Amino acid sequence: MTHLISVITPVYQPVPEFLRAAYDSLNAQELPPDWDWEWIVQEDGETGVLSGLLPDDPRINTGSGRRGGPGVARTLALSRASGRFVKVLDADDQLTPGTLARDIAALTEHLHIGWTTSRVLDLLADGSTVGFDQDPPDGPIKRGTVLDHWLAHDYRAQVHPASLCIRRDLLLALGGWMALPASEDTGLLIAANMVSDGYFSAVPGLLYRKWPGQVTSQAAHVAETERAARMRVIEDRARALDGLFHSERQSEV
Image 1 (cartoon, helix red, strand yellow):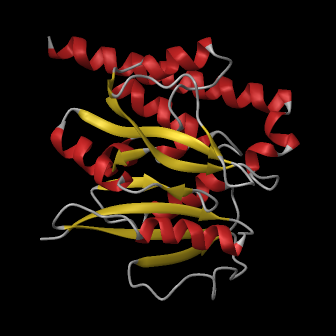
Image 2 (cartoon, rainbow, N blue to C red; image 1 turned 90 degrees about the vertical axis):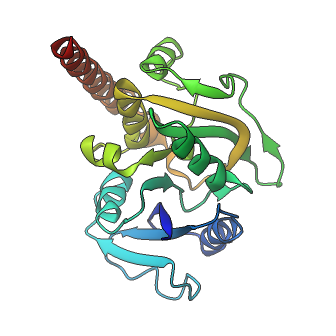
Image 3 (cartoon, rainbow, N blue to C red; image 1 turned 120 degrees about the horizontal axis):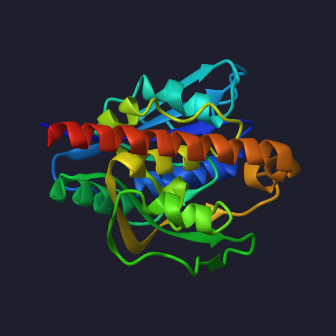
């Protein structure tokens, strides 16, 4: 029996060479025996832009839907994902060698772990990379610690949501990605950590491309009124989940 890991990528006005680099990084992954990947590529819109952009690979599953932002596109893509685990990969980023194997190992060897992340390197225009100076130690991440760090560091988590790999049943139970114009991946990461321990790999697992066209470089991303609203609903959701988690634990005693 072959086990699957589903890699989900939302696409909006993609840069062809970036999207191809994302595929090449996925195609180069070496997985454990009896494992394979599927790539669920979802256009955020219905323009047909994906036609001709991707190679002829039976493991690629493309789709489209009315535009609603990356969170909506990811959640629509989830309807076609059949893997035990779901890995995120943005259309302009690249996986590093061994990333999927490390994610699979963490989730199969530690059954109480609901999700994984890894060290991320910013990929600059000249091809050089820059790391983050607040990575946690390699190993488990206790429930609730992502929210604590995020609140203490001006809404910046110590692990990168763009490197998330999560159990599909947990992802579904949390409702997929948040219905936000941005930070929907951070909201999911923090929600997952409010109900489950996670795991961090100190081996770099993602090259996070820094370029003027990325969503996080746009002025709207840091507009204070909307940003404050996004952060508030992410925090409130996390605290609500924490309250539910404690209630369930107390009822079991």
